[in-house]
Length: 358
Image (spheres, rainbow, N blue to C red):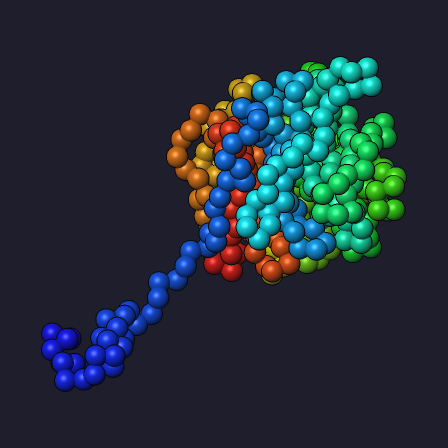
């Protein structure tokens, strides 16, 4: 029918008009996920876990994670990769647990942190277990192409346990940390540096009068100047604590209205003031020494840090080891970058447009 209407027109003009009539009047809006990809296809180790993601001062996106035979294996090293114009570069090992006597210990939970005025920092842990590990650090002034010698953090300072430090308005670095004792007692605390990481002080453990055993906090900012930390627990819920004095003191732990299967989460304050968290929206039975299913993996938004609404499912297919230990940042272009463990085999990188999250 359309072609018969335009049969007396020139072939070129007819083709243009036919295309215009046949085209939809408006395009379907694109979804919030901009990129979803694996950082690497193959690796010289069978298992990977506990990723971290950062934007460097020059705008490079980089990630790190630990990889080896299995968690706690002495061969576990910290691996690092940058994302260039052609995609992710080949990962390289940037830290291992080789000791002075030649013996090896596993490395754990890298955290990348960009000093706004200086070097890129890689914090990680070395030791036989989470109850006996200690904090380590390396720095880079060239976006991770080369690194300083490893430095052990001072006694009593563990560094960020899983999630990124933040920089407060007065320039203080605030690092979210936690401890796990041999008796499996969990508690969170915070480490502050007023001299850009040269020296650190540690807060006391956050009180938990309702019995929430928490680790691995994330830090959020609120318009009234308060800080909030959201943390993993063994009691089937995510927890929160608040500070009115720049992270020096913290309120007792309380639950928020999101489930937690005893699994890591991470959160970020968006530039528009909303709070965004990435977490596993699944249950864990209190008293169970293990963890619940680490799927699905979801994003949730909050305006006040207390009431949250689930806004996006990133992964929902059941797999053996789930989608775990996510990390999240917002980059200077406004997009949100996430990395997470995919079935303990690889690390996935996802980019989300937060303007399309409601």
